[in-house]
Amino acid sequence: MNNLLQLDQQLFFFINQSLRNDFFDLLMPYARDKNCWIPLYIFIGAYVIYQFKWRSFIIIASAGITILLTDQIASSLIKPAVQRLRPCNDPAMLYKMHLLVDCGSGFSFVSSHASNHFGIAVFLIFLLGKKFPWIAPAILLWAALICFAQVYVGLHYPLDVLAGGLIGILIGIITGRFCRTALKKSGIKIA
Image (cartoon, rainbow, N blue to C red):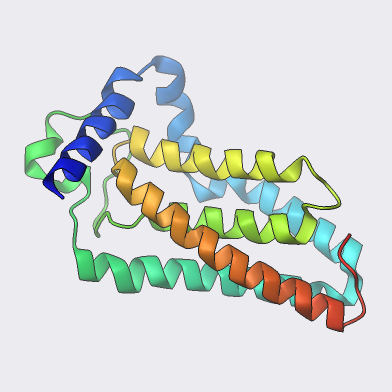
């Protein structure tokens, strides 16, 4: 376990220090900010309502359940149980790292951002992936960018985002399958 944590810390410094540049310093705080992505969320919501009409409530409710599960499992169950300090809250790390945003409070393992975004990404792949084959790589890249940004700005270790992402993927698979089944029973066949 010590070797894994040491490797995690080395990878953190590689991302947070070695990859440091002015462009990433400008971009990554925005990439990890949920408010930056509001236009994307509105666009997806509008598309779902347009495409699925009254049945869109099934999709919106399922997406809400996805976010609720990923966020609560990460923030309310795992983080309090593990209690790993964020790199920016660890006194041994603070002066060695490049912090670009307010550190805030709370624990680091697992990343709620990673869990939430990979959960919704996989959910959307189940919903729209056959109709739009390009959506899987695009939306997984989007979720990965957010995870990378969390490490780059100094809020999480790579292992935090990896574990959060895996939790999100699992929940996204479950809720995505549930949503497809519910839509099928309501008379909609997902392409």
